[in-house]
Image 1: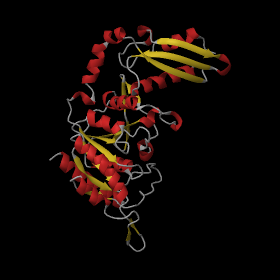
Image 2 (image 1 turned 135 degrees about the vertical axis):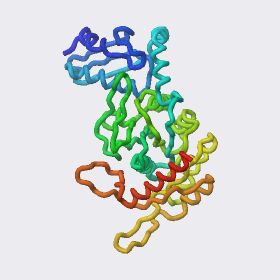
Image 3 (image 1 turned 180 degrees about the vertical axis):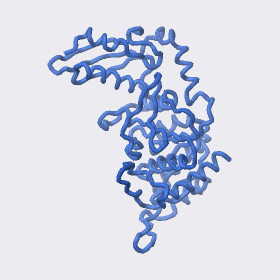
Image 4 (image 1 turned 135 degrees about the horizontal axis):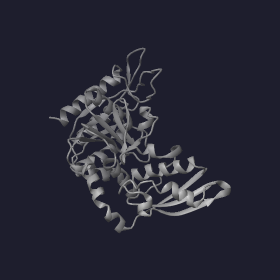
Length: 352
């Protein structure tokens, strides 16, 4: 079993991801506890910033090092470095901020996809809008900002995790679209129990600490409703546009109006409404059955003084033997063609 000295030697070369100095230089390894009978190691580490994507990457790195060298289980706690240590290396932190997506020196257009309630297909709209924009020649990224209900990686069939290069998180790319999600940083589909302010920092890190490269569009899949994350996005991205997703059911449209009204009150332009699950078309007869009612999308658009971008029926993507992406509609699929039309309308509105 590892000794405390051995653990310290293993962790000393690890760098604080924010000030780019080793834990030995910052005296960042604060406590080490060992339970030999269970081969369990507990470590307290001090770093410059807490509750961010980089912290979670650092956590994975430390756990990997200790398990590779004999620990069966690892417990990690983080605390803030003293101000004098942080200030000593602050220029490096400020330089990184200027180079981030939020630095103001890029032409990326932001679109948030919102809904009033869960279960209306908001994330499905997000991934297929992103894919359709890519098919139209745009460079696209997705932030899965639905922290508690992250689903984008599963929908797109993403199996790998982000890498770290030069202290930056490299998003995973699938079908030509770059993706970052809380799901990449959670082990075994564990529930997220962070409070609002901590989640806000996590969203902030998705902008500032991820190497997005040159993007035309960054699409955010917001949590349903009008909670902390949605408000954080409104504050972080004053130029962000929004698409509101609803079903035809009057209740879904009524609840979705709240999300739309919040967008209007914070001066976020609404690009339009997408009515999902609009109808079911029988393959045998061609008749349309309005399973969830009619008129919700149109009514919502009227309330928000916008237009319906598209009405999407109930239908599964084609099955492809060698491709696992359960929620991606192929380009020649009828719904894929509808998403193509929606994406073209979005481009016309955003680039007019």
